[in-house]
Length: 178
Image (cartoon, rainbow, N blue to C red; front, side):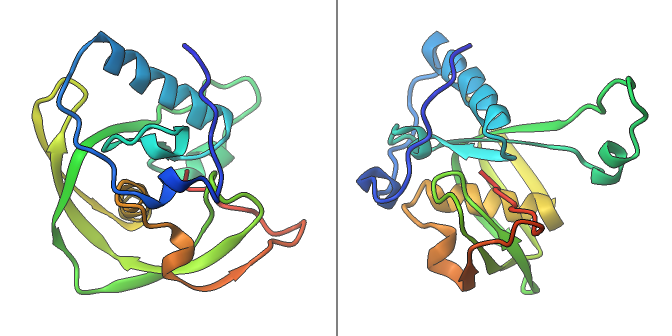
């Protein structure tokens, strides 16, 4: 696997709508694996193709379902399995009326975080890494990650939606979603 370079603002591709993915070949599979590796190395919990300078409607998400599991690990214990998603040509087909505020960061906008209001849950349809139709209903933290990554595919950044943006203090944890 190859680590890809994550681009930062003001790179123009971050503000453009990505093109739908139409070919599901070996190169795409390699790209997806590279994106997971790049996201982990960064580290983040999501990464969209435009963030590595590719105008494709493709994003990856990986996180621990129960963050407390990670904190309660005994030294030397195996890491809990993380949940992985590949989102290709996604479309949000349903969303909650209930909105929740949360703190977000972004690998393409390092050094700042912000408060962003997102839907509590969403239902997304799209394609998996092999081009097969999938539907995901996600809520809470997962829904926030999905919405953040899907925004990237349409040239929207968390700073566009934030009600407040700031540079985190040293003791304040930065939360890069991607």
